[in-house]
Amino acid sequence: MKNLKLILLTVFGMILLNSCKKDKIEVNETKIYEQRHNKITSDTTPDYISTWQVTLNPDGSGNVVPGGDIVYPGRYEIKGSLLRVKSGNETFEFDILSDTEIKEKKYGALLQLQQK
Image 1 (cartoon, helix red, strand yellow):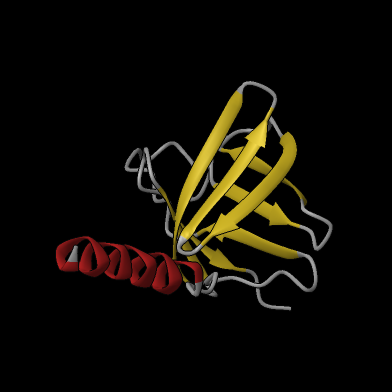
Image 2 (cartoon, rainbow, N blue to C red):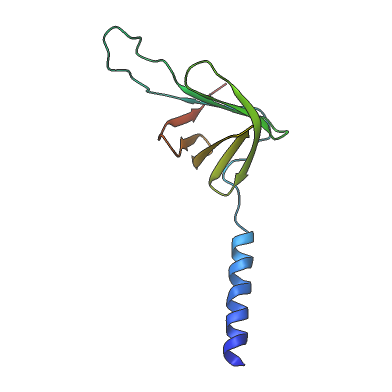
């Protein structure tokens, strides 16, 4: 019986601690993150092309441009240090490194918050 109480207390404590986790980004105004330093090695290609861009709006809407000129509009959610943008059948995931930097999980693109 003592072991059961100890287990239940431990589980409750873990749930309580996990629920107190704060999201790393708060979106009180539109935030735009852009990939920096996407240098192409070819001499005939411009230095910076095909960069990622993520826009987050306070109402939960946003979009992703995964290089090129196609925009994927959708909705985003932030859970702790994970940013997930869903657009139709596509889902883009980013690790939140700080309020000013995110990193795309699949390809490793590093994006920085645009300064106003």
